[in-house]
Amino acid sequence: MSIQKTYEFIKNAGTYYLATVDKDQPRVRPFGTIHIFEGKLYIQTGRKKEVAQQLLANGRAEICAFKDGSWIRVSGVLVDDPRREAKASMLGEYASLRKIGYSEDDENTMVLYFKPGTVTSIISSFANPPIEMQF
Image (tube, rainbow, N blue to C red):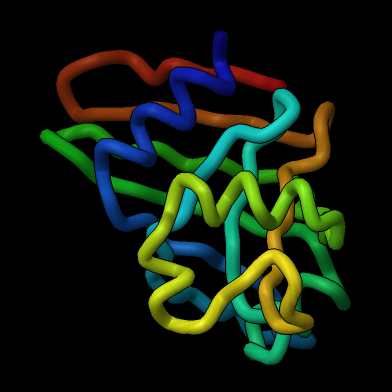
């Protein structure tokens, strides 16, 4: 259930911020794609982007989203999934990606999932105690 609750919070927030590591420098940027496929939490990016190269070099990442006075932090290890089925599933949920050139058959579309067993998800607010979930 924790993966579903995590997914719903991020999906409803609309935008989340992904933190990666570039050598010894943290990098943060906004993202909007979140998806569950085969019981794993996925994100999407372009393989040609710097963020993709950072994640391939060091998969440790954290995402953060804020909605209605609460925020979520999800940390873990992101793993590249080059399978056509994984890309097609993500693109099925985000048809807008096809309009900007992503395809399950192109070499640029990249989907990554949080490696099970490495993920900690914490929902926090100033009004309630934090809810910690692992998956």
